[in-house]
Amino acid sequence: MAGTRDRPDSSLTLTGLLGGSFNPAHRGHRRLSLAAIDQLGLDEVWWLVSPGNPLKPADGMAPLAARLGAAKAMARRSRIRPTGIEAQLRTRYTVDTVRALTRRFPNRQFIWIMGADIIGEFHRWRDWRKLASLVPIAIVVRPGYSGLVGASPASAWLRRFVRHLGEPNDWTRWRPPALVLLHVRPDPTSATALRRASPEWYRQFSSHFATRAALKRRLP
Image 1 (cartoon, rainbow, N blue to C red):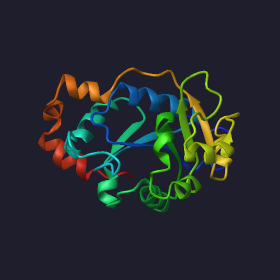
Image 2: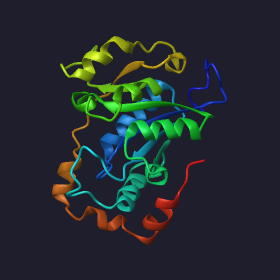
Image 3: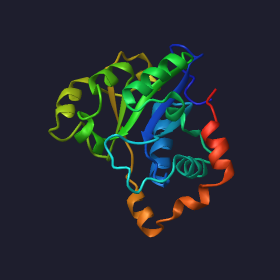
């Protein structure tokens, strides 16, 4: 399995967490996740398909079962695992989800993954400093950027915790808050554009399987 060399504890499963609405999941999500697996030496990435984002309107949001079904189709034949575990945990905020996951899965070492575009609103997240203290964070930036950009309250605070990724799995030894920048070639795919082109995209995923199996599927 990738990433086992040089681990401080090879019994831990290195797991990236990528949260979002995935409305719908697309090739940009897949490319970002595969790059994170490669650059961070991860065993897998979990897509946390959110029941609802507190910072986004519910208008235009497809049912969770359909979004899970689409995510599973996009993640096929990879080490990406879409899950609706936030609905099972009944957590609304990311900090609560991450806290619950670290308790429930002590055999895993987690790292939170998010795009640099989110930094501008990260300070609006519930207990965002606490979140940064729970697990390392990987920020996906465009190639050529050497640090966090922007003047948001979050970027100003987080900038001091940026670390450099050297040997594989360095991040497993870091004490949070700790950030690492991942350089990933951007993908022009847009969920907004996909919805505009096919407003009823979700219908093909609203099957009995998506409703019963995807929602009830539990991670090990």
